[in-house]
Length: 150
Length: 167
Image (cartoon, rainbow over all chains, first blue to last red; front, side):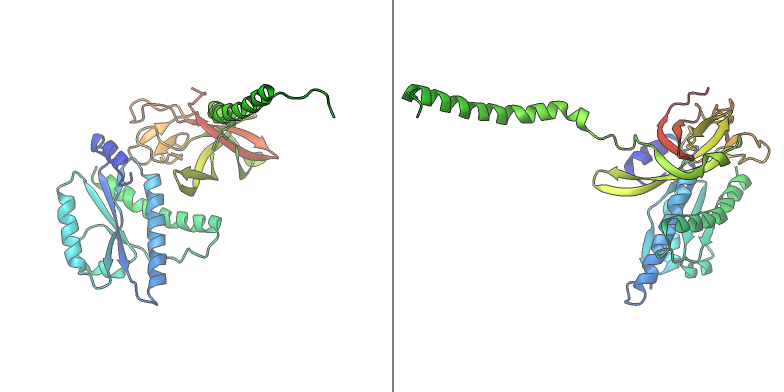
């Protein structure tokens, strides 16, 4: 489900079934040279999470991307987010990101780091098949997590 | 020159009728236009979308067929890609919606290795028969929706979604 008011109504009624939150973590780089790769990474991450939401609509709540500056303290973001998510009923939380710095943060579980693929120049059908390949790499990680603790 | 001279009274009468007529038309035309508007509306999304899946390649085993169309959401136009599970029942084409009737996940044919002849929803292990009938005891409460489907020049064309007519 998306983080929009209408679907949150549905979520609140179906909390037993929607037990997984997905948080995209997005680094903003607005320097002249960094802007384009940063925008590309954002496009990639949001396309991927949208596809993921379509596949698992009834079990995940896709939160809007958490965007932060290059210099942001990742540890602090991690702590604050986990604290916020702790008071919810989610049994599983996944963080998806293209920012390699998250790999050094030990306290977050289930951080899926994916190298961003520049998809902006691909034509529609090629982009689709690339993104579906990407999705196929992520899906088993969710299935595995669910089958472990369900 | 005609001998019928128009009197002042007749002239005023003609003029008023003419002007009044225009005013009445000016008021009535929009009303008539509003009244018939539903008939003139174009039906968006009701048309068939041609896919690149050849009908000849469809067997009795459901395959996923993707189709894209433009969706207008208020002022925001986006290209949406949906898919359908298409198979042949005898000579008849059947297209089922992949949207699980439980909470809207995407179901897969033979997604569960233990049930190779059923649709499987990975979210909460919902299962459906090949014709879309939900299997009792699994979370879904109704059968999968069906798409209108037809053959256009040898390719599959997918139309509007409707309730399942097979079960």
